Length: 199
Figure (tube, rainbow, N blue to C red):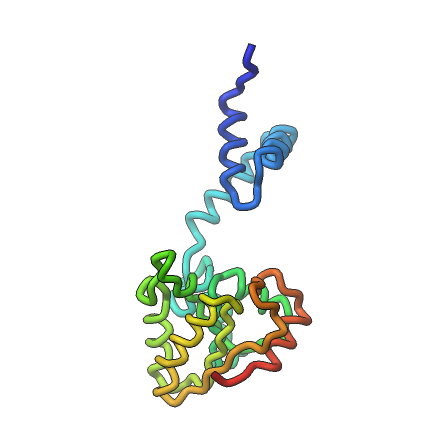
């Protein structure tokens, strides 16, 4: 006889759709949910739904927020003359963990990759350029990952920004080539930030 519990199978299937979660881990997570009191599952489900409904892109920097303008963009303590350009929202969190950067951010939501069909118009480059028109920004830090696509994206944006008289710098290579910012430790990120170069 085939032991088949449809709701359990569906829960396992949903967990296994998450990146880095295999079938066995998905089963462990599903059983963990079932072993908790019913109110835990309700809170878990509510948190998922609320996160999906309330979290969106900041209208200014394109990072994740539950407000119209995120806390970083609206903070009077941030240095508005510097914008750190990153690939994704996780990179903003990586920089904020190190507690040494006081400027603003701009999230591209990817990198230029013609082979994957990602052209510049599919990234948040137009939104970045509109932020630079007020003359307040003096430096752009290109903090895309040190991959072929990340380098190409940094170079493309640099060519757009330099004619505006804005300094464009690149993170120094404390970050290993082929590595992801989100996995870098705070010390490595801090050294990369300090040793950034103009491009």
